[in-house]
Length: 226
Image (cartoon, rainbow, N blue to C red; front, side, top):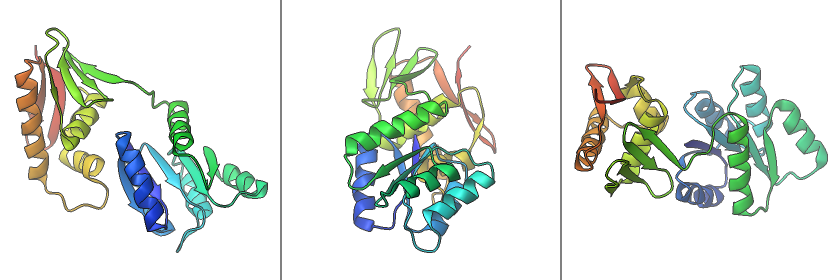
């Protein structure tokens, strides 16, 4: 799951990013409101954590503009502003939840899971296609017929999760790059090909009947072999 963190404190942003990554979120950080709004408008994120007191554009303005444009991205406000009026304004602009600083990391993670569930991003422990199962907790793929399994690396896991959540659909290389490497990246197409190759070898190792099909000049699709 891809998360956007909009926070102008570099120290706090780094700490939060590390916390989210341990929970298998793919994290992008924006350090001001304008950048946060630009990233959030890209449509590649599953959830966002947004500060209110930001340079260039306030969190309120980011939230208001996104909602006026019909952007339904689940957004949790994380702010030191703790007055009731601040919270009311945020909810009126379309916030899904509001947590004040200081906070407990466990509560933040719980609230993120809650707002993504409400928006239809059902929390699962695994994803499957054919006899291939991906454990979302330990990053292992398993052949459900033989119980043979193998561990995936970070980018392999993120790529396979994305393909599994969109199985039988052709995902373009551009979509894959934005989802896995981020909105603002210099990653080249051959990086995608490299990780697809890694995944194919591991799927072959466990004798999975699921394959990653290349669509020439377009992208890739995850399908069950007939």
